[in-house]
Length: 172
Image (cartoon, rainbow, N blue to C red):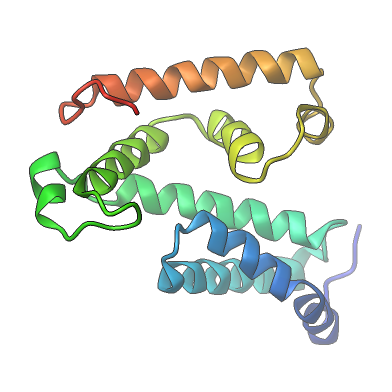
């Protein structure tokens, strides 16, 4: 049984991982710096409590990333849904088009309806740009199984987008 982590152990890991961990979380927060900081802070609070009792995991950054991913999934599930009409009233962002926010809102809602397993696979492949082989090793699956699950996860995502009452059927 692992020994409970000391304050020095946790501080050492914090110093070694905080920059990379913040970058990983910030990429997932789509430019929302406050959300990224909240997720990083909450992840570390959970780590301190868990590691002080149960010891430090073999790969602390992976443990933190999993906690952050789950916190973000919960955040986006709780986020109020915004209609297209409401999204159109907001100023245009990113590509200069008000439709960008509307499409982003649709995709966010659809992602929140996916299972955690499918969300993790899509995130690893499309956002973290991991190779299928790496995802297969990480999840204990064959490459063919990962490819099939990715295909089904994308199909589910498309279905949720198209089934959204605010969807106009245009995914471009």
